[in-house]
Length: 164
Image (tube, rainbow, N blue to C red; front, side, top):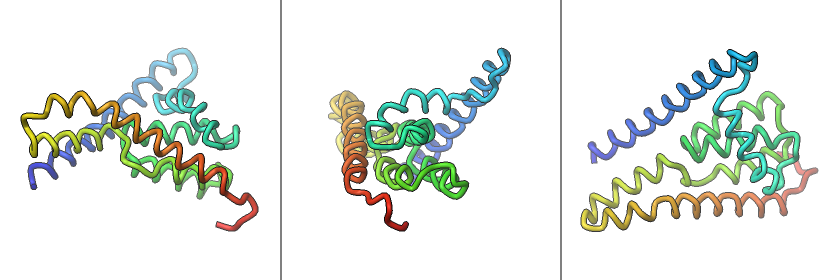
């Protein structure tokens, strides 16, 4: 129990530190050509712009919500929710975007969760570790699309005039 908890904590710290390092390294590199505002998070936001738009996010918020979905997928949902709250508090995103993103970020389809699941299941069934390892990316994609589908349903049902 303690060993699994320590492994989970170490994994999360590693992923967050790696993301911070990559953000700094990419920002430094782009700073050499005068674009220090570009980070790995910004690039991931561009990559996830289309899925955010397809979920029903207004186009002016797609870059930020795409960035949050990417952070949720690579790091975890807690980091993404922290950034979502900051965007909401700053008034940087629309109410519709906030509600849809709340559903899009709700799930365990991220690499850290997949690692935790793999570690836990391998302990329970060591002889099946190879089979489990082969299915982790499928599980990640399935979870990602489930989160996106839930967000799409929320986008269909949201009342833009309702109070939050």
